[in-house]
Image (cartoon, rainbow, N blue to C red; front, side, top):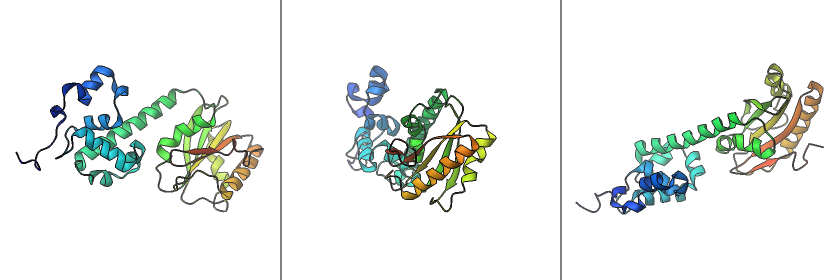
Length: 233
């Protein structure tokens, strides 16, 4: 067969190097990222086996988080992928996301800014426009729900403070945590972020609803305004 027409299959690799066999023997945690992708890809392309294709994808997109952010079409256009394999990759990433959400449902409470950031980081770090959400908490800081309140560019003149508390009042929430993202990837709070937070804190005092924090989400980074003593005194 012509070399340019042949594909490099996982079965062409030595048996003790095949990702699927290594997973069965050692467990999935022992595999590198490119090996996990190779199990989904199954075959490579001329000159690259499936592990090498997986490694190229991770390098080109900047890891799994980059693959998650990339559109379906962008993944399809990669050499050696196509619609079927792109669908498998996207489905696997979504399964991981939903598993994380299920694990969070089992957690009794948010005990730190890190807990709050972890709850939304996977999804909000890849949003292409700003979005403001409210985490509704009960008296033991357990998450009742996460509510999206605003989408689009946020500034202090546009945000209606009453809207932020509507669902919290309806659900009888004892406290809330504000979360929003910066699509630029830089989670540094803006002057408007600080102004909005001050107004929300004052309104919360009148409504007897504690504002525990305001988390700004960037690309795999986050900032707690409370930890930085911005708006919170």
